[in-house]
Amino acid sequence: MAYFAATIFIGALLAPLLFWAGQWLTARGLFPFLANSDFERFFHRAVLFAAVALLWPLLRLSDVRNMDDLGLAPDSLGRRDLLAGFLLSAIPLLCCGVLFIAFHIYSLRQMIAWAAFGKIVAASITVAPIEEIFFRGVVLGLLLKTGYQYMSVLTTSAIFSIVHFLKAPEHTSTIVTWTSGLNSIAHSFSQFADPILLGSAFVTLFVLGLILADARVLTRSLWLPIGLHAGWIFAAGAFNRVAHRGILDLPWLGPNLLVGIVPLGIAGLTWLIMRNWLKYVGLGKL
Image (cartoon, rainbow, N blue to C red):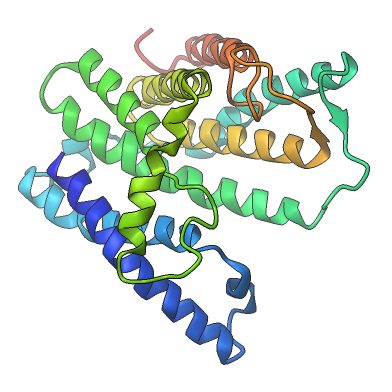
């Protein structure tokens, strides 16, 4: 908990510096895409930077010297597990999206921003490995050292879900000062104003965290959870670029394919298929 608190606090202090550095670079013709980036984007990157910077002392204090200390082992079939995870998560979610369009719950967009698919692919390639290494690799690995496997999985999944709510609305800090990062932390709690949306999103993220943790424990590797995570990011992002819905229908459906009771059922289906696939290929102690 001290590590998480320090990560968020240091990230909040670093965020203005990163924002001003980005503005300085764009003013000199470098990285022009940063010119229209909201401060919250820099805040998220600053928190990630702080998490990485504090990771080494955390592991040292926890007496972690190698992968085996975190309950991880080399996976000679990592590419197969990565691809399988991607397909097992992306295909059911996209099939669900097709049904939503067929029943007019969602409608196709008249204009599709195909250029945005590059960002979706980039997010799948970068976000999934980073979050899996951090949550299922380090956090879950450290908690598993206590010997309480089920409690470790539940705790990691809860942390995974809560951290995703650490997001202030865009344009929260129109004028960036030294305290803008702290302001972003304070405004992150604005999402709690809608308890139904909060509950739906939290439960879905919590279950996704359970699935990812289960894949990690069963295979003693991060390849399968990285594939699952990347598949969800890609499928949800791609579908959001080609289709949209008019109003929310909570708690059944939320603002995207990863929020609500129906997406929760799809996640459960992926979990069932994943476990049967592991049993079929002879992986995991099922």
